Amino acid sequence: MEIMELMKKIIDIIQNSGPSGVIFACALMSVESIIPMIPLVALITINMMILGKVVGFFVSWFFTVLGCIMSYFIFKKGFGNKFDKLTEDKQTINKYKKVIRNIPFPTLVLIIAMPLTPAFVVNIVAGLLKMDFKKFVIALMIGKLSMVYFLGYFGYSFVESISNPILLVKVVIVMVLIYGGCYIINKFLKLN
Image (tube, rainbow, N blue to C red):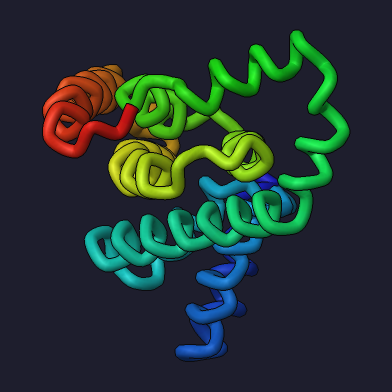
């Protein structure tokens, strides 16, 4: 109950702050992708409660993707070359770097789409290993749809999502459809 009370207080503060409160919540979402200080489910839920389910969903999706892109560039530009120099003569690490850098597009989307995957870890690894930006961004845009939907719906109706297994079936169906769609997208865009 303490978490729900805290969320209600945060929602009240954001609602009473007007447009600047919503901007603050969106900025927190972007920062959360770099430094996970607040659970993303709370931020998505707050956006959906304040802005409505549809607008809150798209705003949450946009700022989550934006935060992941910022994190990617921070680690690619800030630490990528240093990481390469530290690991250039390490055979085993270079082997894993190549495997991760060349991860199949549908698999990357699936990893990003899973609600429990820590986004900041994916962003850091993609940035440090200088993963292809086009592949990373398209995977983010697709994968975050499922993840934001699940977390938003879960947070918005916490009790219902625990007692209603249909929600979990819907999420699994969405993830399977996204995974299958990724093969089609990959065929046309050749992202591997």
